[in-house]
View (tube, rainbow, N blue to C red):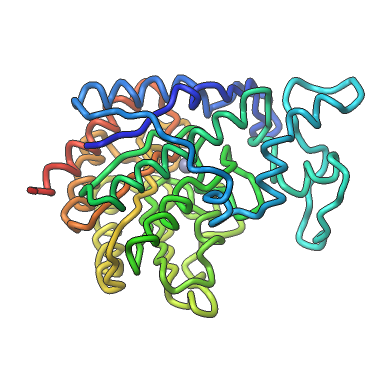
Length: 344
Ligand SMILES: [Zn+2]
């Protein structure tokens, strides 16, 4: 399978993260990319570097002010008086009642970044941009006629909205890929199997009827992103009915997951899409630090096989997965399963 990867994906390197009030090492680490790349080599997949698709392509799903903020945040952070930390972080965050984007940099930090999981360091923008370009290059291959492609995106993207970073995500790689595929295909479906709800992707396509977004994820009553991802959310306006959420109980294992996936794929087929984007998180794994689900390594092959059997032109976008030692075998398992049902 054509796979896309950039060494720049490894540059973004946050050191710390606050979880339940405790300062812990960052979970979304450069080592993740190393392990995922090893899986691609194991499988004999062709690995290519992305070209730069340019700012105008990013604006297909992101707000201009937000892209400019991400691109310049580190330089503006450096210009602030000391003392300050090594990476740009907000002091306070915009809440529901606060809707004005300030002109000041410190005000914009809390407007565009939604938590302490999205710091911006010296090399972050290079990684963020490379990750987005990997997604676009993979989508371009399918747009040009490839049956399938995989993008090794790091940092991940599915929690990023049109103008808001969150949950380790800055630019929404999946949404960019889906929008790019719309350049050839009239109807595109997004299937998000990351253990966390893809709130950013849902937000970006919320009012659109041309992109169907279906999410299987841990019940947000007990998992990030907490305030969104519930079954009653179905889209609005032209997008009414084009959003489907299937929150699953904490501790869901292979059998129950596959049953829910079958339900998701039935709904997806009813939408009758021309192409598919898969948001592939591997954090539903039984040993993932998220501790939300109990999918096994063979379980990922079964998930991949069912998705492959849909037989749509498909771009797979890497999202989460934090059991670093298991990423190599779990990605390998998913891709082997996926390809087993393609029969070109
Ligand atoms: Zn996740």
